[in-house]
Image 1: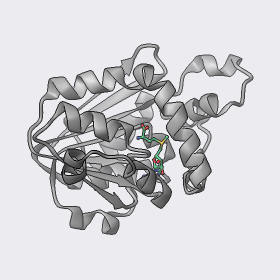
Image 2 (image 1 turned 180 degrees about the horizontal axis):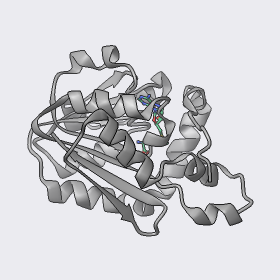
Image 3 (image 1 turned 120 degrees about the horizontal axis):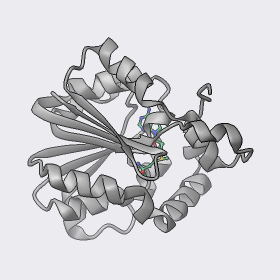
Length: 210
Ligand SMILES: C[S@@+](CC[C@H](N)C(=O)[O-])C[C@H]1O[C@@H](n2cnc3c(N)ncnc32)[C@H](O)[C@@H]1O
């Protein structure tokens, strides 16, 4: 089954679509994020965090609350998503989270952010125009012993039998198979990584260590 392209970047540049995504993500947040959140909690990384493709900022706020000493930069390519994420933040979160517009595929838009102990991203890998370049860029922003943690959909074989073209199924069709990710990491020269399938099997996590 061939991967379809679903960059969707212009979609997220529209404020109505950004708001729609925010509402969908709020309704589905437990199923989408619980494995990711418990994995990040277990890693227990201290220091500076970068969230890539933070969207409306739901996860940024949860991570900031779970890790009260972490300094977080939340990045997104869409100015509308960045605006939405900054709304209704309490004073503590306002001082601890900095929002920056930037493109994971363009190192020039990220390099002034500094280096990080943890870089994480949820449900964005399949949107990146050049996933291999984005991973290479993010890996270069890790401190020694830093971790890059990517949580995304996984393209699964049973999609052959599903006719639906809904946004969700097309997002799975646009996601990478573990073997494709492994090939990218090998080409970049990343040696320390673990790719894990997450129940219900159309999600996966990629943990990369510097
Ligand atoms: C499906 S949303 C996920 C938002 C959030 N991470 C979540 O899990 O709810 C994908 C986000 O990735 C952003 N995005 C897409 N391509 C990007 C890129 N190259 N660099 C940074 N952000 C990007 C989009 O603007 C959008 O906000």
